[in-house]
Length: 289
Image (cartoon, rainbow, N blue to C red; front, side, top):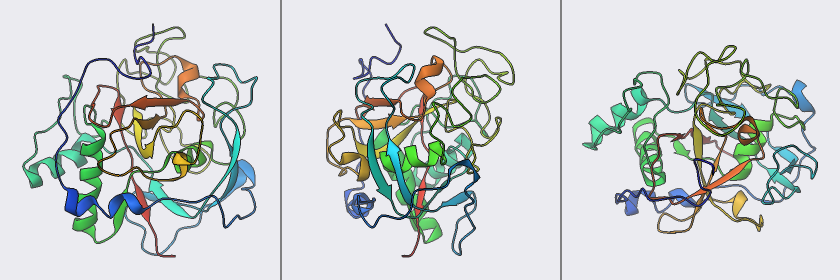
């Protein structure tokens, strides 16, 4: 049995309020429409744009095949391949770290999440639920005067693929020189190649994907703002409402996962009130249209 149990096990956390501040937060997202030419693969360049916050990477919108082909190794039935178009957006170069999240916790009087003794600093924050991640984004928005949020599921996969069509952004074969993931068979961390960490690794420890984003595969799974829909009925292109109690889509795989689980197409579903030792997040910054 895998360590995730796709629809969760037992661990619940109590969500925290912020309804007024966050009501508008879930209105952001992307749409199927306004199509642009598809990106030109791994050679695509993403120019800097005015107004980008530090650590954010501009991603030019376009259309792509979301999901995986039927013959991709490790494919699950919820990875139905379909065409999706996204608008321009900016996304974090790195996963949000303990250092960044701890500043938020101190400023707002929230309890700091447990690091399980692995360390804090530039390690990705863990043990935070979806509501915690959304609250962090709202706080950062008020601090910096820009609008931050979690990525939609479609935005996340588009950025993780970075114009590629292979099983991983670096090719069809997994490798510990490219990402922090676990054993070939479930489960647990493994030290091999450039992967010197049994658990989480400092953000940016592995080469970026072709669009300059680190740890889109492995290290920690990442919350998206989208409601999980097994059949891809459109929820992947929008943010769920704060009070929507349905599952949320989680992406990217983690330090303890088998290689097939860190593919860009791989999907997980978790309750928004549930924090785990292998789930973190990164942010999107909405830019003026």
